[in-house]
Image (tube, rainbow, N blue to C red; front, side, top):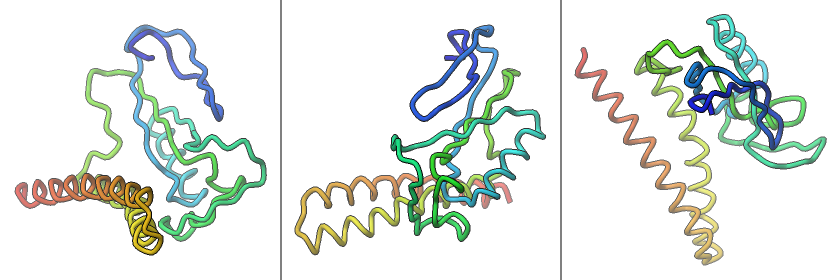
Length: 172
């Protein structure tokens, strides 16, 4: 949308609101923060704002419920129980910066990128374990399909983590 001359102005559960700007004036990164506690996600958003970025929280689910809670066993200690008062419907962080011609990356060091990828890998690992167990116990092809999808995500994250480790060893 930015390349077409629209800047993100507001997000809601299903909608994004834009305002006119120069084409390509802004760049965006989307980061998953659903594994963090509300305090940690808010602290990270404030840090990014202090660095000059605009941030928006966004949901990944399309539930229209009020008072819902969700257990996330793969999350960090403070983010394992998500509710309206914590990180439920605030799983994504959309970060905006003015386009200065440089690539927009939130995680610039190998260590920081590896930490983020490990956090993203945890839900896939949990889904793989749960779906594989269901596939075996229930003899379900559907569960086996979900297990394979989760395994593909796990392999993707692991390959990237190995690349980061190899690159960091090479630089030493």
